[in-house]
Length: 128
Image (cartoon, rainbow, N blue to C red; front, side, top):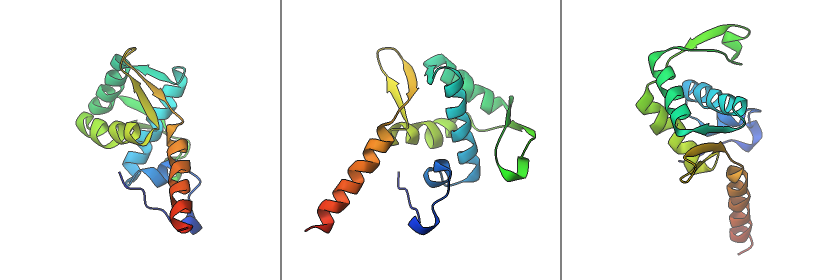
């Protein structure tokens, strides 16, 4: 996944940098919020249930988008697209880790470590 950003106009919300569309931002943020409620961890079946609830349109949430401020909104998102466009990129970037032994998804800090590594790579290139 490629992240493009303007350092002079960095948004306050990291999801605006990571995801291309408003719908992806909302669903990605909702996933992290739901994982926080479950002690920062989802089992494989909980993740599947979350994806299925989105697919069926049965998720009702308050989102912090200015257009919907203070309102409960019914959300719908295709299950296949959830895995392809939300969860898989979040795993690849290090926002979410999957433990093969416990079969759980967990919020991770590896994204931060990867961004530090990118910065160090740039310093190395800069100093050549």
